[in-house]
Amino acid sequence: MTSLFRLNRRDLLRRAAALAAASIASSGAAGGHARVAQRKFSAYPFSLGVASGDPVGDGFVIWTRLAPNPFDRSSLPDETIPVIWEIARDERMLNIVKRGEALARSALAHSVHVEVRGLPPGRQYWYRFRVPGGDASAIGQAWTASQIGAPLERFRFAVASCQHFEQGYFTAYDYMVKDAPQLILHLGDYIYESSWGDQVRRHDGPEPVTLEEYRSRHALYKSEPSLQRAHAHCPWLVTWDDHEVDNDYQALESEDWQDAQAFVKRRAAAYQAYYEHMPLRGISVPRDDEMRLYQRSTFGDLVSVAMIDNRQYRSPAACRSKEDGGGQVVTASCDELFESGRSMLGETQERWLTGGFARSKALWNVIGNGEMFSRLHQKTAKGEEGWWTDDWNGFPSARERVITALARSKMPNPVFVTGDIHSFWVNEVKQDFRNPSSASVATELVASSITSAGVPYDQFAAFLPDNPHVKFFDSRKRGYLLCDAGRKSLMANLRTVEDVRDPLTKDGSLGTFVIEAGNPGALRA
Ligand code: FE
Ligand code: CA
Image (cartoon, rainbow, N blue to C red; front, side, top):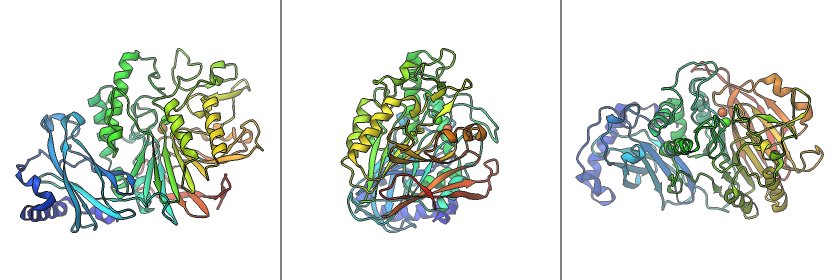
């Protein structure tokens, strides 16, 4: 399949021209666009690639953005531009089964989101975009989901997070494409707003604040060919973490105690730019400075994925310091930490998540989760029990409510897949975190980062004796998770790359862990 994306642009253009001629000669679904005059762009308009997302039983979302020069908005006129989309049953786009016209609106940075519907379930498709009489995009792959509850033997998905552009090349995505997952989950830090650490290349500018600046940052990341190939390979499900907006922000609280009104505007700009660059449905169009991202997808009777939003609705970090409003390690002397009203998901999302547990029809119930869910016991310099406030450890009452709901619902095989911490972890989620011999209610698999520098290995490895529910930890390799769900087990391969500073880096693996159905926790395969 990857060979398809090595087609050069001339090939694509030749095909597009042949197809345009064919469609003008025929009437039917495509008739509408022939009246639109040919449009000349200053450069190839599909420079940011294509993407698909959110597969359901009768369709999926396809995305592109017209951007002859994504860093110069004057490269496109401030007007709506029609774009043709096509869905085919073959990779050469000869047997087209659906075609339509979408509008690339200037107000949404000329992005195009098409919710394709009315296709039969469980089928493979190819798609592309064209400008009337002009350029064609790369060809992407997508598929319709098996009907909810229909028998499904196996399902392969990959899990990614944390791709700092300055800290490395996204070569991990090329190995991911070779691994041929059917679905890619991205758990956040898709872009980074800020700069630190060792750098192999530079961002387009300082920290973004305005809509134009966030658009430019997304375009920079999307210009990475490995990332484009991974988007073209299969549908994605996405959620965000903090760096899509601002390090460690919490709902409407910024890390730097920025003026509230200014931060509302900044967050809205970041959310809109995120929407404009992701294959998301209409439900996610930003409204009133908010954006609905959490959603559940189900594939046959085998896998359900609930993507959750840990940033937009959370309570402010407990005992925030005036010097730094982001995450920190606090001790039990912080009363606020344990307040029962504190929320990670917000009331509505929490009700949606926990209410769905009892209704699941799937064997494997994946929760796509921004930051570490498992309790991570750590000692402060003074030897006191510490709590990191930016992940679920900073929301003990909210965490407890989710665990209680999981235990009560008896939903089969809950598996948290998690990002954020730039390291691999395999954890058992205990019913009572104070009691290591209490029942395990779920498994947590944490993906390392695509490029972002790992947490200090020795510091975290020193926590392990106090955390017997942690079955594996390593922060020394970048990479992703490759998961194979079957009827009896779910296998998670901890896939790695050797050196993100080398665009031709080799790949590897830290091993495969197996979760047996009906038995939370994982063992080395
Ligand atoms: Fe990160
Ligand atoms: Ca993060």
